[in-house]
Amino acid sequence: MICQYLQLSCEEQMLAETIALFHDIGRFTQFVKYRTFQDRVSVDHAALGAEILRDSKVLERLPEAERIIVLKAVEMHNWYRIPDALDERTRLHAKILRDADKLDIFRVVTEYYNQREFKFNPAMEEKMPDTEGYNHQIVQDILNNKNTSSCNVKNINDTRLFKLSWIFDINFDVTLQAIRKKGYIDMILSTLPDTPDVQKIRQHLIAYL
Image (cartoon, one colour):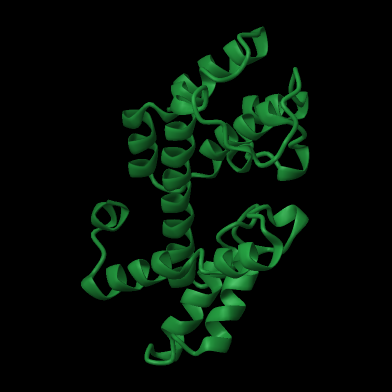
């Protein structure tokens, strides 16, 4: 979808698909070794994935320039922001991956929220405590059009607000259109307490989208 929107050549689209295919390869080793998908208590799965790709030489058939792009895009896909000092092609593919990854996570978590009452999964809640309230720093970041730091996440409500803040790290209009069309924002907001803060966030995000 994003590649079509950007009207990429077949070569660039294949490169984007290769990056997407391998971007979470570190998750397998992470879970086998640490029995968790939580980077904060185990290992950075993106950095691990890039390391696995380097060591396995699975990308050896790619030209060196494309190999480097794959490794950088995989390694950076969970970073707070993309570094400024990137060449244009690497930056493009990093942006594509980050948008596509967010879309996929939105899909997975909203599907889970719709069935959470019947099938609770602690892993989907990032093993955070199900306590009342939320971190007001995340609220302020959202209202200031800022992608908040994961360091601000302290409970389940925070994990949901954190994902809402991703809206401000989306790179392409087509991604925002897909988020709006699928109703992901409303679905996540519906899981949060109905407070004045959350109402402000709802109005702010509706206006932004």
